[in-house]
Amino acid sequence: MRKVLITGCGTGFGQEVAMRLAEKGFDVIASVEIYAQVQTLKRQAAERGVSLQVEKLDVTYEGDRRKALGWGVEILVNNAGVGEGGSTVDVPAFNIRRQFEVNVTGPLLLTQGIAKQMAKRGAGRIVWVSSREGINVNPFTGIYSASKHAVEAIAESMADELQEFGVEVATVNPGPFLTGFNDRMFQTWESWEDEPSDRLFDYSELAFPRAQFDPEPVYATLTAVAAGEVDTYRNLEPKSMIEETKSLIDAPWDRKVRENLGKRPPKLQASFDMEPETPVSD
Image 1 (cartoon, rainbow, N blue to C red):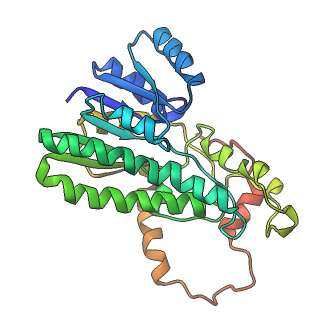
Image 2 (tube, helix red, strand yellow):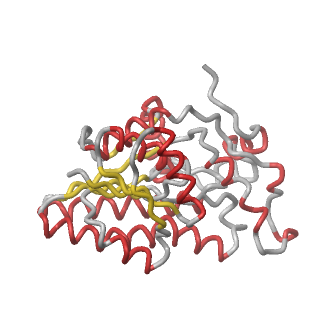
């Protein structure tokens, strides 16, 4: 399998992994959300000395998804996504719907057609770029986290459903990495069409609540999973957060609904205390 479609290659993980897979000799279709990104990515690929087929593919548009069915995709990397920050009781309806359209509904509809082509061929690989937030939750990222929890459910079901057809399914779960994505998520409130006085929180005071890692481990792991060099289903980075992540999955079983009621949780207070774009100290 050599032909790879990666969505969301305009920036971040998708762009770098497209370059690395091309360097490995894969035939890479690097898709971007809008036409304005096409020539920019082609120029960046030329500067890098790699060949990419750059296509405009907005996963929320049926016409774009239909177009992708003609590309003969053998490996699909569902990387396109957006992050909506804000309290679950403040995020407006439009933003909630947009979060799920981009992160869940669009990618799933794209995958349905391509997965059936893979099943008919008896081979294929589908990689879902999920998140650590797909298996944990935090204040002010609940809507984004909910979309990634949905991705986790879809991916795990899909892995069972496509196994007999020879189609591999895996997830990659990035934690807090310094790509700009997390900090942009805490700026989306600036475009909300709501009544600011109705909000429970003042978002001008908040920032992403954790120090963020250099993204190199995600580039390496996502490239390896897409290339078939790693065969584990779930791939969380950084690996230093695996045990913490597992412990947080179990934590709700012991949580009491009245415990510390009326007090602000420390992990929520962290959003008030943290400065934007804070890197993990060496």
